[in-house]
Length: 80
Image 1 (tube, rainbow, N blue to C red):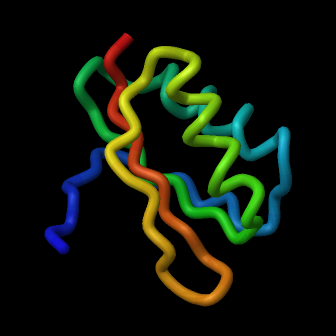
Image 2 (cartoon, one colour):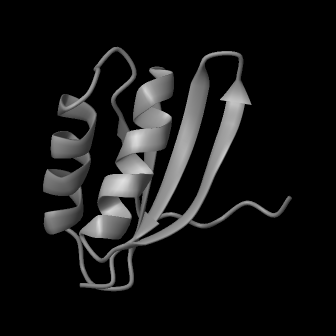
């Protein structure tokens, strides 16, 4: 699997829903169109709900990858 270049990383391991989505959304708002945000979470429901909510917001989710037993990365491209 080829690594996706990201412009900013948000490590919110230790946080749970809905804070994971809120923090991800706030970070994305500070970025330019076309930039990629890499979000690290360690709460499995967030690995499912953050991408779903980002898609509902009109953003492009490039991928959700499990990095270890309890860590996921979510790659989001700001498109709006």
